[in-house]
Length: 311
Image 1 (cartoon, rainbow, N blue to C red):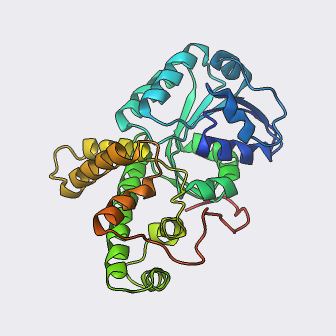
Image 2: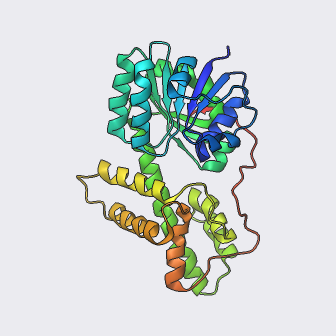
């Protein structure tokens, strides 16, 4: 594939991993973040970080955003919109608001640009290895054109149809992950109170009908004591709010419960505490520690980079 110029906006926990995978390719990579310290996470950066969004936009054909909130996405797009033209493709990889995404996409298209909505799912460790899953919405021909770029970033890539669909599906999957996380905390607590080793409990859940992606990943760092998943309470709260907004005409008992639970978690533990720390509230109430021997402090995807495939 002929090298293309790619501008990456947002070099946070996830954005830095995505950018590092792009830096392994022969493409021309430009970066911008409003926190200059973020650039220290990047490896083999050949071009100096752009000083402004205008500079990045003018130097790039493909612009990738990976930002912490819908507000941040809107702010960036409003800034770069005046510099966009028909050469540009905007790839949005954050978890954002469906309506905002549709509105911003129309503005980009009005400038002659193309848009792909590409939220990622599967954890920071898989973003690092390049084996993250990607949900993609937008024009099918644009998807095909950008597939080689997306393949550098992820493994399983699912085309979801029109703009807005991928954001809805990403919010749904994040809601389920948060629900599983609270369930895991209660399940481990019951095992602990009944004097069952939590390492044994993890194995039992893993081979059972009660298993989940959350158990196979986040349970490990809970039992290891670090809680480090690279994802924080405020981001969970944002995603649950987006989920409840999508289901505003439905009686979402669990959605409302999660909203209250994570708001309490932010109040007690801090909004930048790891999302897995929500289990600390359960530990505190039960007067226990959810720990087991030989569990990691950090999640590492031990698989080599898998080829990107459309599923």
